[in-house]
Image 1 (spheres, rainbow, N blue to C red):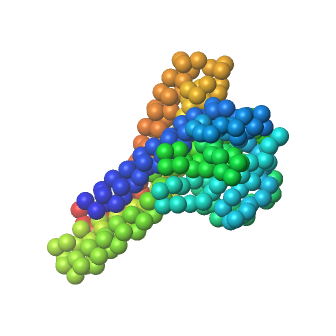
Image 2: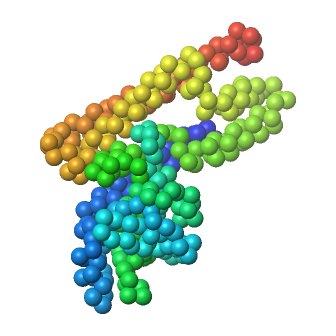
Length: 300
């Protein structure tokens, strides 16, 4: 039961949540990226309006940071402030797009932005408000700002984000190390409490083996199947990225049939990936029991 809860159920639930979170991130970026780009002409027009309720996008380079939470971004014909102030009910989502394709975007706090160099590229999407006769991007409870720092050509930003903004591992995510340690401690406690009772010898051995269950995929001979799992998982990630690019209209040369083909191939390959992982773990468990039997630690 402990193995099922801490090694299977919770990590898989965390994996589903991570996928859901990145799916929302991709959809929100596509929505903001399709909004009107704020330029000088629109800026002059909006400053004459008394009420603003429009969502815009803006790209440029970091010019400076003032007041500790106001980011100034310089575009082609306009420099505009961005409020990164964090409040209890309002937050600003800041992300750093990695250079390597295999890495996922890193969520950073607004106070970490001061470490970025001047001129670093940034994408801002969200509402603008009029403060002190000047427009400023700022978060609202309904529409938090999305601020993305990147280091790729502007025309490649949508493709880069759609490809990278997805869970890197199917099983091992943010919550997995914590629940794995908790599960291991429970198993160690069970093994220690039953160690002096011969009737529970097999239970003790199973508990000890289960403690090391998370590292079994990286041990031979199951390591070969784990390698296949990682390779298939990486291909699944690329196929789903291709599917999303077609779905969001970023690959106009492809049609809906191509989207379905990529989706089917991704699901099929993911099933095989999980089978490789499970069989790799089972093979290692079998060899561990075989070695214990050879050394007469257990009897059949």
